[in-house]
Length: 66
Image (cartoon, rainbow, N blue to C red; front, side, top):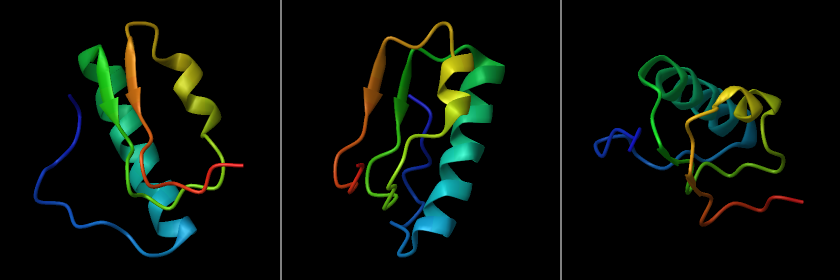
C-alpha cells in the first residue's frame, strides 16, 4: 500500500490534495494495487487516479468527498 505511516493527517484541502497527488504518483511508478488517501481532507478525487491501472483497492476514509 502506498502511504507513509509517519505522515500526519493534513488539515487543509489544498495540502491534502498535494499529498494525494504525491501518493498517486508513487503508486503509479510502483504499479501499486492498494492506495490509502484516508484523512487527507479531500473534497474531490484527483483525476490522476484514472492512471492507476493496477489499482484494486482505494481507501478514502475521513474525507468530505462530494
